[in-house]
Image 1 (tube, helix red, strand yellow):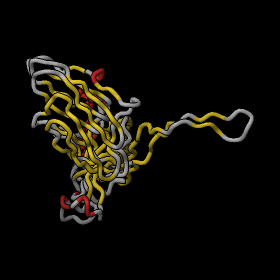
Image 2 (cartoon, helix red, strand yellow):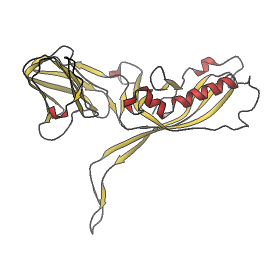
Image 3 (cartoon, one colour):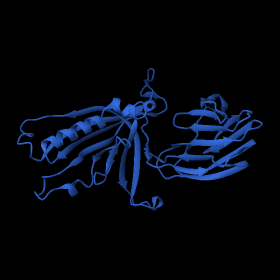
Image 4 (cartoon, one colour):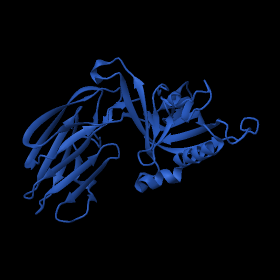
Length: 311
């Protein structure tokens, strides 16, 4: 749950909007408490609304239910707050900016292929020494689904020169319910033969693994990798140019780009599984990523990374 003594921000620059300004009282004029405020604060926020997806069916002629595996569905973020300004014109300008920040179509136009799911940032305090800080910065990708403001004459009366505020409510939806740290943790994976790299997930939830590696032009081969008991192999085709492989664990996508001018293309067919179609995740705690380059060498710009994950 976000700490409302700290900033809460939606979307990246240049369209970022501070929904909860931890320093809003610094803008207060000499008129005293409750006057002269400029900015936005959240009075309440709830990030715990997550769907549970599970097959359940009544057992035939006996007590109880049959049940399938548990999966999480979408996460919803419900919030309400107050927008402040020192004059009526400034308030309505700020209201239009807030409404634009929480507009789903405008969110999609930031990065069109992201379908409106843009970063939603907040922080929470911690005493866990592994983080080397007093607060953990979190991020989810969310799209606005509801925005509501209410104009009430009794609350918005007075001359244009008066300081003014307006209440609002909003709901955002995350297609990925996992809460991630705002910055990734990455390790170099360049080399040949068999090698291993340590990678730690300080969170409480499995984190999808991401890979980016380059293979020099030449004969084909394989890159086998293993983490948390999941074994996978990426087939490297013979090529006359350097090939760049990108594996995105959360979306289960593998693409290949050739440096000779060919476009990046989906190639999930090059990913094979040892026992089942299981994509790798980095479990909470310390993990070892083992890799074997079968006939190929990973170049020095190759790396693996995760966004440490929380439930």
